[in-house]
Length: 173
Image (tube, rainbow, N blue to C red; front, top):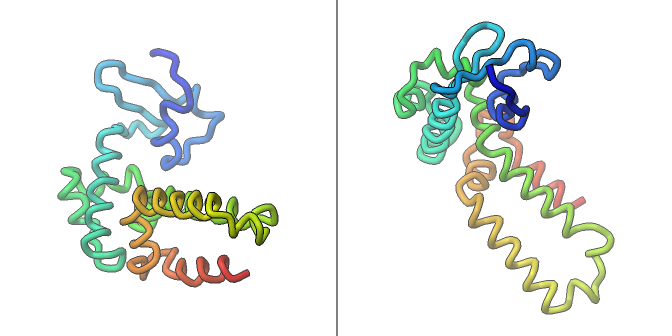
């Protein structure tokens, strides 16, 4: 048993809902296999977690949320369908995990640019501000192009199926 930091396991623990109080008592790191053992003795592997997310991202991009298949995600990730449930509760949780960074970055950017400080006509009309804002939008779109497309056009059936309405309302309030 070796000491590890919470950050080393946060990607796994975040989705396993293991309480911070239980981490020290219930978590062991096997140095050779780099696997995590939780209370229920299921082995969670970081490479499997990433493979599931990568396969799911591809499946959602190809088919959208509604038509994406957990069976295909499992096949592409080279894990069993039941193994997916060791990492995620359902398809919606996988989808949220994939699009959450894009959603958070988008709303952070908008809240940063749409504060009273930035809603100053003189500031907004300056060429430097406009170039900076356009560049920031382009970087955001480059980084999260597919995730934003999923959120805006292909999230039907997910818990974010109304994202476009929420986004529009946020922009117009």
